[in-house]
Image 1 (cartoon, rainbow, N blue to C red):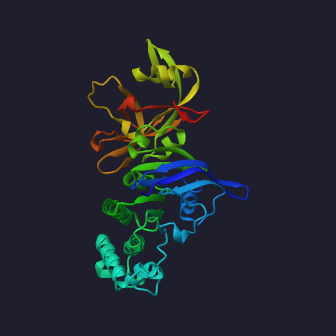
Image 2: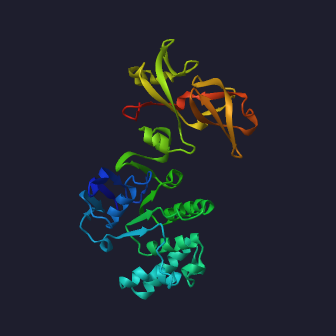
Image 3: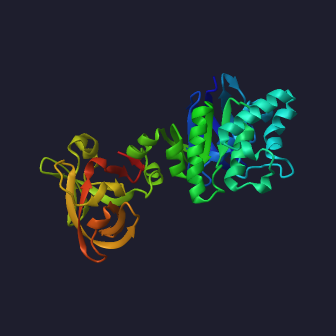
Length: 365
């Protein structure tokens, strides 16, 4: 079993706290994505698991074994780097088999493992080529193959797709997911791309300034962010945020956005929102939950009108930018239902998907 347990893990670089007391349990065969902006501590955490960075304090346990002081080569962990790190003078076969030769693996076992990994990655016809004869996607497959042949307990990926163009990144995301389904191994995957994390991972770990902001499934991260940072980071386009106040209205609560615009809060959130009546708050709503006006019967679907500021046609839908008070927000509508720039347009907002955020604590209420 290859569970990974991180307990009170810290990493200092002189006076800089790169990782600040994080705790995380990763299950056997789970695909975990560490995601966050540059400098958040995700790559440092990965390198500590790999043994490439010393631990300032805390414990790392892999498969019932504390590995704090275990050399990287003895951790039974394989790492796939951003820059491929292939030997240019070696063939694909030699690159994939090199680590096994260092471990004095029998030749027939090396042959079996390399051929099996090449079949999984669809690079069997490339085994005699050298890296300079390969495309970026093919090189990344070779780097993954070099890790697969080791048959490790844990795979670590450090932003492996960031050097690829956008179309190839999408293709390789699919390939990595297929490979994980076939090669059942615990995976820790670092990326700054939240779309990558959402599409690949069983669970996502959102990091910010050296701490873990939230851990959950992609659905939990999207539907129920716990902090302002997670709400703003997860989702593309990102969530809209507007200053607001909670008011008592007609036996319920309303969210006031401007002097002329307020919406009834979802009835089931009265107990959660009533302590914040009259306090400056933030209202969060994703663009897809504000659309062109459509027939509806749900009590949380409410209508309003605003002038169109900018249109961004996206094919299947159109992003419509409007102003609410002094804040520009993004909405998502059907292409044929949008008005022209400068003209009024009717919208429907789904308040069941709203988020109320305390700007002082930056916690979602």
